[in-house]
Image (tube, rainbow, N blue to C red; front, side):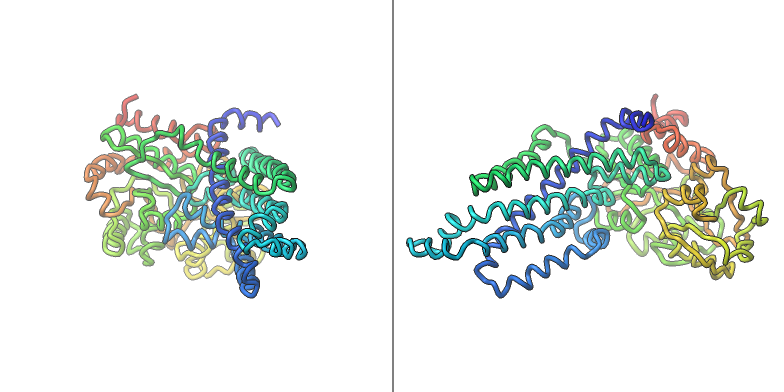
Length: 508
């Protein structure tokens, strides 16, 4: 409990910001869902033959995994709030649509006949009789939709939209840090409960007030959405720098930002923790971000779908640079020194027990061990696919998991080996043993700024500014900086600034 209180005190500013983002995204999505679903539900009551297929289609939308929806939307809408809101609206439509249709249809037929007998046309009968009576049922549907949306909004953090999911993802990346996960999960649950109570009161009020409660609810939602903009005069950034999940990318993008703003008048915003390689690269292609730190080996194997021509770092960089320019019209600036290559790691106890020194040594125990691999590693040639071919391995039990989970799984003996990155801080913290790669399966992975050609053409000064990091940051320096963020809870900006100042690249 004391640890949680300490984390809460240290993260108060971040918590407040993410709560507001979470609330705003949820309310925008709810308003749009209402504006679509209520009129559509009313129309369907006049065309009952169309109701069943339309409602069934809306139900199908809820069966599609949220991550799949986001992945589909990114190429069209980029990253950020827009695709997140579209996905949330799709998830929130069904309860409102179904309750609107049901609520109107369940109005006593005698009342409808009486209204018609009094000379009311269809529209007047709807607004004067049917809607006021059906309003409690419609409000109940809105309540259900709201709870669903608030809970699902946590996924918005995966594509840089913010919200409380950002804290949860950070906790997962820090080796399933339970305090950070709770710091994001508890406010999300409390937010859903609070909003549900407010809507419950309006639902009860609607039995007497009818449409007035509906209008009041919309006004409250609009007020929540608009208020942050009334006090936010922040100038839109000219450059957006993104990063994959983890402390290392976040440290690097903070370095980029500090250097650019130190030497130019450009304004820079950061989008850290955007998720997996595919998400971030799609965001760069689409234009939602302008720069992100990528690794030379990843560029060749994942983006160019080739194999490294050599294990010489310079040759690999030239292959990546030329390939990314030819295939994607992208510019790869000069790399830093550290090599964050893939590695296969295990505990020292496990290595001693079976005499494990090289990856090939796993062959003798491949039917007895459990591997904990990230989804990316499990599916890449410079990963387990290559290990199968090069080292003739066929591990019987493989569990795929998020990067931040694997070290916890290894510590808890749920898995015996994991894929790791050479500069990860937990390699030091957990005293893990890295198995040698004598066949050089894993190519060099040096980090370097990747951007579209049009970005460099618009801001040619970026090349000289960011190339100041060329050849800097050793493996050990990167591990130590990651350690400071992951285990000493220093901010990535603080760590990045300290390194740049120490190197004479930034004034203290």
